[in-house]
Length: 303
Image (cartoon, rainbow, N blue to C red; front, side):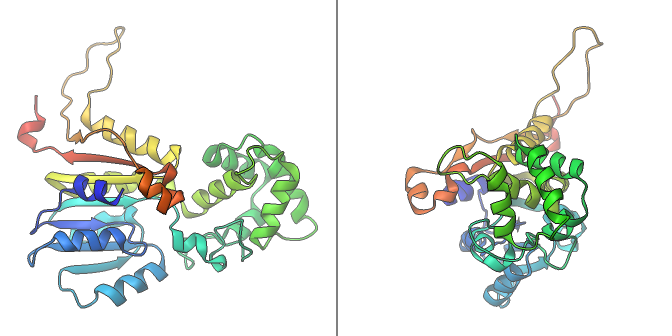
């Protein structure tokens, strides 16, 4: 999907681009290779470990600026004020976060039940599970994980914490597995619940909605927005956002015809998926979906 992303961003040598999810820098390096001396690359990430990698690798490059924070706040960065020629958002949890047990993202590795992308901000998963009531827990598991056994899991969590707090990833994973029948043999019963808790703790969907709006406002005419999502909730938000700015809302024959809609985005191609070669190298890419849109010049946007 790397080449699809680069093609979607359509990097120009003297352009200004923002990578809102630096991770470990794969896409950032690709953009930099295509920038000339007059180009500019803005890097953001919530994760202090990702920011440390960015500073070690790119601190000496005058074209690069680095900011720790959520891409939802990209519009507040002074470096964005003059406009952007491209924005990349690679959503969800990164491979380094999943692979390090101490971050608490993986049910397959024992570690503290944290799950925060920014460990210096907000509640950890353990703290939230210790205080949330049964209904709130069930609602989060259903809304963000589409977990059909959400009520049963929430009930088990509340019953368990009455005797001992849940503080480790394996404790939570084993508790969920004890009350949820195993379905497909290759999917752990805790998969949906861990996803849901992570999304909630990190406010990921709220950040996405704010980030899309900020990116839209910051893009120059002809600038590109590229969004990589890894589950249906993220992709639905990205798809609807692009459609809402690209197409007039459907009419209602019982209401007066709406007038005055001016499109500000144009969807570029169909949703992209990882190739078979990419999947062989990185099985985690199997659910990745890429959507690209282009900011329309005001003159062309008007009908």
